[in-house]
Length: 111
Image (cartoon, rainbow, N blue to C red; front, side, top):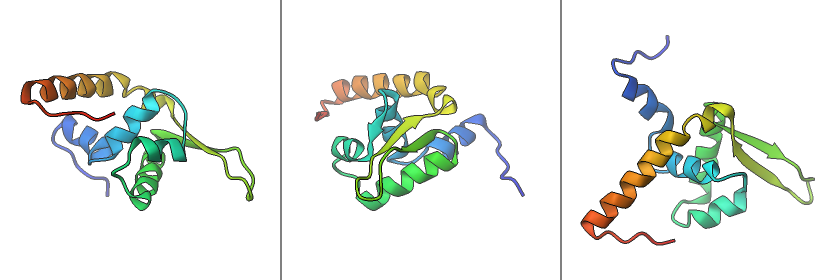
């Protein structure tokens, strides 16, 4: 039985909610990234968590995985799908709000 929602925000949070999913999507909004690049940009996420979240976003149809390597030399890239790119305005708004909030509260944002 499909899950029942009572508010459209529930649908959005169900798909992109959590600590790491929006961060992954925001990085991929900038362009194609290899797994190692994502890992370096997100130093606080464990490898297991990153792999799980990437798989979930792939299953939701927001992220696509492209394997360009060989078994001896893996080369995997991740990019947003068309559905994932449709989140760009939402991610930009979250980014802007986060910057403004950090400025108001004196919260440092490290690169």
